[in-house]
Image (tube, rainbow, N blue to C red; front, top):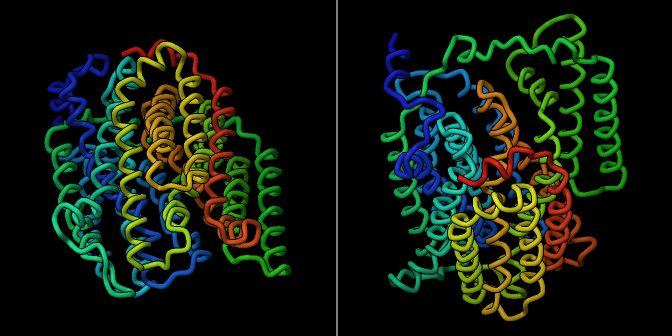
Length: 506
């Protein structure tokens, strides 16, 4: 009864929303991106200050992607089935923001590498809980004609939050007199203060979204519980699933044995574990399909993965190479720019602050460029616009690796900003047009897993690659990242997106 009354108070699903309503719905991402901005720029700095070697950075960073892999599809799955006083998505937004704020206060005060690693796990888990429902919140309540605009508006808030977070240590050091240096093994006061300010910004922006955005309740019990009779599940080929599962398990065994016999980096065991889980999940799903047992819980998520729309399958390739390159940039940008400066030294901290400014700059470019993105997509198509922006990003990453004078890094940062604007908007608009509304949360979570898997691969391979193949030169990792984004740009042109040009114009 209450759900039906609430639905009557809300605008029809097909009624265009005002710019203010869209802004209120998206503004919480400003705070979420403050957290990601602080993490992306400063995590390597924190680890190196506390004693980590450069070849240890990828495995220490692994908390971010592996937590997203576990959290995002589960939160999407659960939020599809949630309804309470705060609706479907908002309970998760609020809970994740509260826990993240607490961890933000604690993390810059740790004094050991293991404690910093634990804090990174906690922070990444909590902010994933807050972030994942934002995409589904827009897809739930925004008409198809406005979705490219809505996701582009999210980029504006994301870019603004990232600019604020990335430049904050430099601003606090140069504008407010907080020291940017500290004794060995201690984080500087400007960095600690940046995390405190970030906690406040997160709570304020997410609180505004929760307070001003109303959600439509599920239209039926079937939509609320996700108990859908899917014909495609009944037609699942158990033989095909068993064959695919065997291939993944064989790959897992091969990687594990090679790592053990050759004494390779232990991060490769992670790849073996991922391959084994994918294979085992397909085997179990095949067994249940053969016996007519409908998948539930985590197996239902695996079944959703197996029945992804073709748009998501093609996007998976694009996102793999995109996020492999981005992860390499986040890990190695500071070491590459700092060069031979010892971690924790005044020169190292100055270079790290400058990288933060450059990260702020490319996010500012993304925030501004997001206003023109719907018009570009309307003119040439969403996939073509995305491919073009990714090529700009590849050029920018190549420039980041080759520029020797740090003062000129703003030039390649322009290209990275163009790519970042599209990365944060266009794929989500494509996904929201391709999946059923009753499973929007879980498919947004699965799409985010497609961003996480390449980061796990990068975490497993980059340490060995930089150490053994690149002679310990982090700038080479940025060149590899540039090649990866160029491949992603080519793959983007294969995405079927017939609605892209028609719906991108508003």
